[in-house]
Image 1 (tube, helix red, strand yellow):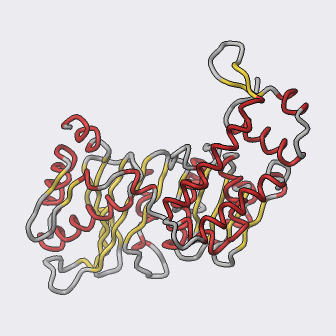
Image 2: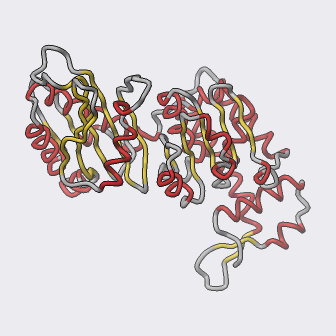
Length: 357
C-alpha cells in the first residue's frame, strides 16, 4: 500500500506562483523546485492574467511535451494580507492527467496564499502531498491524493453531450481516433474546448491513452512544433486562425458552429461505409438511451470496437520474427469486403503498426 502511495505521489513535478500587481504587471514570482525558461514562458501564456481580454478563467489545464499543467487563478479580496496584488495563479506541473485532483489541490494552495501571503506554507503542503499523498489543514481544507483515481478522470467528461451535439457525425470522431489521426477542436471559450477535448479519448477506451490530449494549445511556434511531433492527437484552440492551418489537422471540429470537417488529404483513409454507419447508429442509440450512464455508453462503444478488432484477426498472422501480429493484405483482399470496410481495416492495421515493413 505504501509503495502504491509513493508511486502515486511521485507524479507531481513542480509548483509555481504568478502574480498580477496593482500596476497591472504580471510576474512569475516563485516556484519549487526550479523550472526552465521555456516552461515558465508557456505557463505565463496559459495563465489568463497575461490575456488582453481580462477574462478570468478559474481553472485551465493542458499538456506540453508530456508535462501536464494545471492553473488555478483567483482575484484577491480586499480583506487579504496581499495588498499590492490584484490576482494570482497557482501552477502545478505533473506527469499525470487528472484535472479534478489538481484543481482541488491548487484551490487549497490558493486559500493558503490568500491567508498567509507567503509561499512557505504552500511549499510545506506541496512537499507533504509529494511525500505522503496528503495535506491537512483545518481552515483551508484537506487533500488526499488517493481520493482521485485516474479512471475517474478518464470518465469525467460526457460522451452523451458530444453525441447530442453531433449525432451520427460522432462516428467521424470515432474513426479519426481509431486511425490515430490529428483532430483539432476550436471554440472561443477555453472551458468548452477543455470539456469537449478531454472526453474524446474515451471513444477509444481500449487504449486508455490520454497522452494524445493537448487541451489548450496556442498558435506559438514552440507549442506547434511539440504538437507536430505527435503522430495522432486531440488539440484544443481558442483562436479561429487555427482553421487556416491545414498542416495541423486531419479533422477540424468547429465546436461553436457544431461543424466537423475532414481535411482533403485525410478523406481517402476516412471513407465512410456500411461499417461506419453501423458504428454511428450504435453510438447514437446508446447515447440517446436515458437509462444509460456515460460510462455505459463508453462500454457499448468499446465492445463494438473490440468486435472490429475481432474482424481484423482472421487477416493477421504472426510476423517472421514471431514478435507481433501483422496484416496479411492478400487475405484481406480475397475476402472481397465492401471497399470502405477493407480500406478502414487496412488503415486501422497501419495505425496499430500491423503492416509489414
